[in-house]
Image 1 (cartoon, helix red, strand yellow):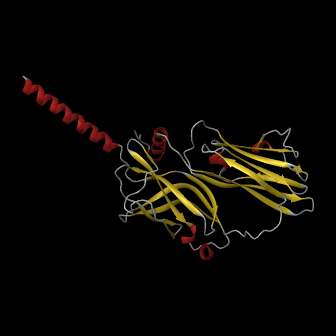
Image 2: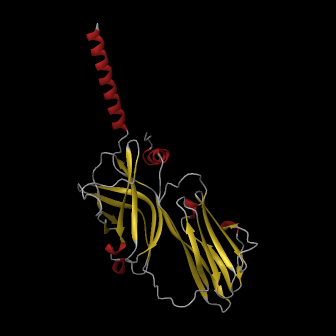
Image 3: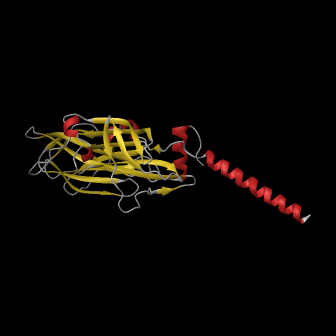
Length: 292
């Protein structure tokens, strides 16, 4: 009798192990999944571009390089980690979040895109085992190199800024001369409006009696006298973290009293932090199946 119970228990353990193995295998990705990025940057040599992707826990491949619009962009080495061991930013039930960074100096923009934007929504990613995948990555805009040789005071000068880990940030500007703001704009509006609320307010020299106004509700032009301030506030609409890597320039443009055009930028940058629920929804959206 005892022997029969022993073999029955052993059989149940075996069935359970097989069932769990089959279930875990069913959750494996056929190939890594890249998050949807909404990134705007410039082709300056010191700028980097980081791509985030989900991979299976047991996938030990690392990314070697990307092909972007026919141009090769090589990934930076992660010297602080073993060269053949990819680093996991986050670990989940069956998957991991990883990232890979390219330095934009590895792309010859001066030759291929000297005067125009490079805009792309997919890349060809090549891994350490020489396999490659076509990956949808959202939308990335790379502007030509900037001329940073501006001297003297800007008509609208940034005086302070702050940002927290949840993606909330604010910028404060002061007018160094009388001016008119004619537009405040940013890219990826359709993709970001549900995630980020952007407001502005203007006030006197003491920042008193200011009222936040949603960017969509601003009535232009906005007049600022010398010494008056303008604040730009970014606030995430969700109580949780945003799933997407986001980086863009919010541009404030207008003219001075002397009719000189100006443009001032506010830089917004957010790196994703995911929950298991986020991973489930991303995989569901990308593959039409569940992750957990």
